[in-house]
Amino acid sequence: DAGITQSPRHKVTETGTPVTLRCHQTENHRYMYWYRQDPGHGLRLIHYSYGVKDTDKGEVSDGYSVSRSKTEDFLLTLESATSSQTSVYFCAIAGTGQGVREVTEAFFGQGTRLTVV
Amino acid sequence: DQQVKQNSPSLSVQEGRISILNCDYTNSMFDYFLWYKKYPAEGPTFLISISSIKDKNEDGRFTVFLNKSAKHLSLHIVPSQPGDSAVYFCAASTSGTYKYIFGTGTRLKVLA
Image: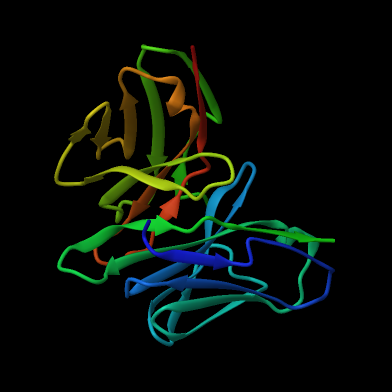
């Protein structure tokens, strides 16, 4: 357990409504990520963060925004949800955390299943 | 543009035999490669990695081979077990960036 919690785990929302997914980590890792998993597309990087208030776009960032106001929380916001954003969303962490060893592989949360109707 | 490709969506192997999963990449800046395993309704879990300074890395039943000139890596599982049935993702990164790009995944089914 890498100390990652995603919330909510499941959500159904209507087209056009805003949605925020939360990722919380307890081990002080520098890097945090949001991926989406879709059949035929694998895992695609949406946005990632390399520190508090430092974020960058990934492969499929259109329609998504992120914020990281403190080390432990990384929020993903769909400003106006569309059916194409129905997916399973995974948060991940990497980089130096508590302890000496630098983590060079990403650890994933359990995922959030989002359905936009 | 898919920078990391897994061209086999699925693979079936008999229990006890070798499973070989393949991955190709296009970005020559990638120098760190990882394999993940994913069960349904769970997050991906890290399996094994390899740096471009090596061409092979082994961990128990899992071995990853890297062919830099061909921009190709493979994961060998020997012997395959029914519990290995899962979706396997390869991922690539450039050292120091901590930006991981994943492939589309290969669904492995190990038949008892």
